[in-house]
Length: 632
Ligand code: SAH
Image (tube, rainbow, N blue to C red; front, top):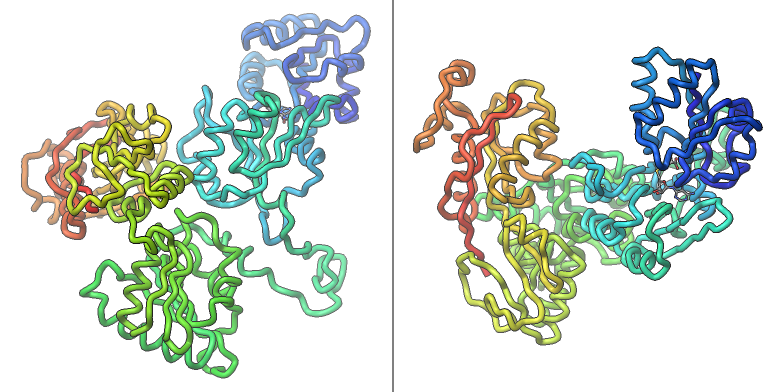
């Protein structure tokens, strides 16, 4: 019999009572010497045979199990923390299963909890985070792409990172790119509950620096999240006004606040323009702006979207929403690209504060005073285009636009506006700020690119200037992206249209692999994908839909007639034609997609196939690269 036993995080008395008993009864113990406290071996009986697995491979360990089993011995395999987390027990259990050797598992206190105890924190605080993401940075062990740190960071949940102390810089960068702010609190716990334990409390912006200064390179957990800060709501469980199965409420139950509810909604494409009025005058002004906006919609596709108007005003009981303003925002935060308040700025600021995450994801927030004198670009002036919306609303309403972002005030080049305008993916928002600061200081920044530039290059930029200190490099080349130089901000143009055909129920993973292999062959980075296209029969194909969602790109579908009408010669297949009514899906839909983009965006030029129809495990992929121009 083999018992997998969790040793606990370090301290000898943090093993479970059962674990200790199993240790004391074992004839053979194999322990993970690199992480398990050797003092635990003092619980072993005298003639017990002890092996350190640090120097053994899986086969060696199995050989010990088998030999012990032949002799009727009991073996304990002692794993650090709890064996179910990064313990590599599944592969052992499978072999034991196959060889008919009985086994069981005794849980242990994971370092996940050891670290919480050291930090004296609660991972789940009402209104801050109700979830814990347990993950790791990608090192030699691959992490599935849909589990990127960026994508997890966007939830703003509590996150605990194992096995990541050797890559603090990368972790810091990816978490910030994903949406945690630089001032998000971080706890680092080295050897939690061991006698030589160390804890450090810092912020995400200083994570790598702190780990470097403190020389922490292994056996540490990184805990990230606002639960380490000071703002939270008291628990409902012990709230006197809240009923539970054991206790009646003293007064009426209160509702969870808007911010807590907001994150229960799934992220979807953002297309909503949410307008909120908080007074009679504000309501009337909102109606005027709404009307004018709708009227302009066809002529101004740039500002098109679904307009949703909400009023919260006691004096207007018939139209007033029953929810609080925060709850209204909460209900729309994941789908709104713009939120316009017709109110005092204080209402807007206080309402929006808990919802704001990072400028890469926040909606544009705009405020009009109820008289319509001023329209203020409040949040996400550049990345969310609040400044553009502000100027637009100014023309619709006659209000005076108020814009306060520094580069606009000084009339200088703003790299985030440039990136947005040209659909360039910005890889490092923190460094972008340094570039803006340099521009504001009057330094010249080089724009390194082989693309055609349309428009006048402003004084603060020079093109391909090797003497400049700071560089903005526009490239979709994998090597250039990964060999990024210091003082270089990489912007990846979204220039690849991927056409895909697949069998029903093909998994997202297989689709990702098929595309990635084709992209790799061409040396193209996945961040350069502009859109994915297919035939309309695949509109709701789950693997394709989630593939696009995890890449955060539009999924365009076309009917057979449109695909047949696409000119050019394509790899034909009689079978595909029989099933879909068109002789080729992937190549034709990629080209159809180019045509759509060209219609709406002047920066897309000629295209060429970089990869014709390539089939892999039921997925066909074609990649078209579109020539891009950079609009300044
Ligand atoms: N099964 C273990 C984790 C094994 S993976 C558990 O439940 O804790 C090994 C990683 O766990 C280390 O790289 C480190 O990130 C973390 N770790 C293990 N023990 C730790 C401790 N005492 N303090 C901090 N981190 C620890």
